Length: 123
Image (cartoon, rainbow, N blue to C red):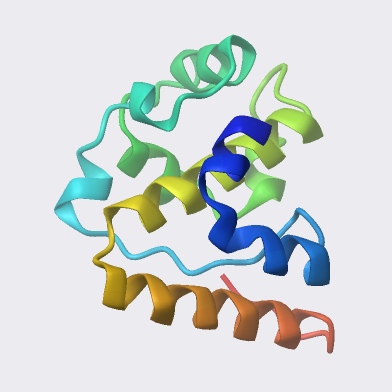
C-alpha cells in the first residue's frame, strides 16, 4: 500500500495530520461498483480473504461492509488487511474522479476526519 500512497501524494498532508486510518466518503458509481477486485491491487492475503467471502467486485465489498469493523468479521482477515482494503478503496475511488472533483474529495476527507476527532461517526 505504500506504493499506492507514493503515487497519490495528494493524501500525504491528510496522512500526516490524521494518521493512516482516514474516514472517507464512498460514492457508488457504475465504475466503482463494477470494478473487479483486481483493480484494487491488494496483497494476496487480502484479495483471497475477500474472494473466499464471496466478493467479486469493488462494489461487493463496499455494499457488504460499513468500515473496518465489518471487514474484521471476514475469516483470516486482520487489521492490517482491513486497513489495506479501506485505503485501496479510497485511493481507487479517488483515481476515478476528475481533477476538479479530486479537490472536493480531498476537502471532504479532511472534513470527515476533523469531525471524527470530535467523536462524530462518519462513513
